[in-house]
Length: 115
Image (cartoon, rainbow, N blue to C red):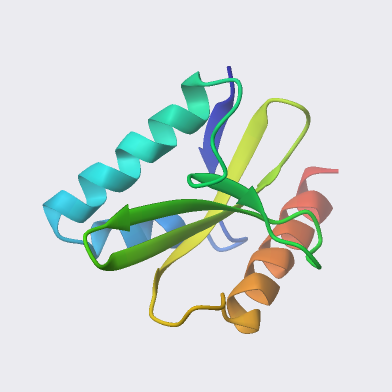
């Protein structure tokens, strides 16, 4: 069992909530369903949850809805807490480096402020 939390910036913004709020209902429902799996299942298939190689401990929740692909970036804070940083609609095969760097910056910020 994992606990899923939303990252907040120092000024109180919540990028992942802003992303979810920007989506139509069906897309948001599918993403919430995958996030529930993340909370409830001990092992998730790589089709839903995968570590990004070459990153600073960044993982991605992978959501497919028809031809649309979405990614929610996250990291672990301890063994059972997953912090969601932000999301994107994936338009190209490879995850854009700038999105991974953004998640890494959010992770560093979170760790700095929590220590």
